[in-house]
Length: 141
Image 1: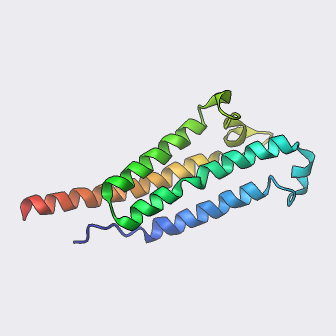
Image 2: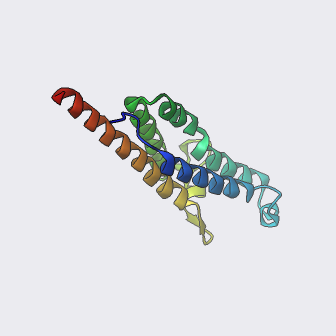
Image 3: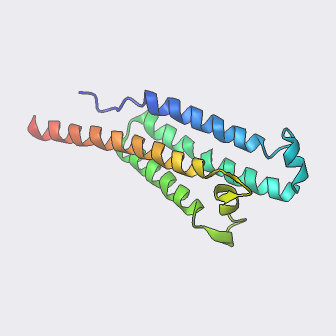
């Protein structure tokens, strides 16, 4: 039994997720004519939080690449915690992430938080299952 989980499906979903976030970022640039009607400061704050939602996936990628169960679980937990803070952070940070991830003016990027957490939970769960199976096989064998 391999001790490395097969993350093919989850990594494909992660690429799709990151592409969708990149599209959301692009909607706060001059590419989108509606973005021009908002202040540069407002657009910049949205770009900041949207980019922040994907910038740390490199740590997860490195953990998956090296195959360390503990490292994958740690990276997932760190990102899940960060995503949960987006919904409760308030304006004590550079700006309030709820202005980006909450529902406002009929639009919402809340899907980023919910889909991101769900995807990270699946990666974490798969890793935990393999880790437990490996631990059981080494204690029995």
